[in-house]
Length: 120
Length: 110
Image (cartoon, rainbow over all chains, first blue to last red):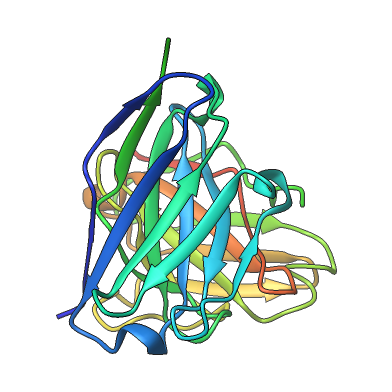
């Protein structure tokens, strides 16, 4: 069965960077785009960006451009999301989610979420 | 990219039907038939309930249905059950590989 397993909770200071991993299993890793979504406390879901694990190409939400980098390692079926210049507003649960069809489908499988806390 | 507009909350009694609206623009909801809906229980990962405006993934009860008219998509839940109480989010493809989410709607089953 499809599984997305994310790395554990992180605590960072303002200005630092965080790198969250998402290990995929149960399907052909390079055949499905991966999306990243976050949810800050008391807020809604927010789309961050997408990576094509096959080609490595990425598109980021305008809000995060310049601060976010999504990469992948096809040998281990892991995608990464790195967010830099962290500020308190980046405190959130970060999710990876598989796109069910290229880059226009529903997000049919989600990771368990990674809590990133930014605090001095 | 502005978030899609959803009501903050809706409620209904068991057995009743509720509809949650999701309003965007011609650049997202109105421009593509790629609207999806997610159910989110606190502390858990979101769950896909509807994709491509009207389609249900396997395992999702047919009590959940989706529709769209112009720039507004809707999720209807009929025969409300206690376990339907959750937050619901719409999302739309917005071109150039991008997505946008709605602000979320809290569903209370009275």
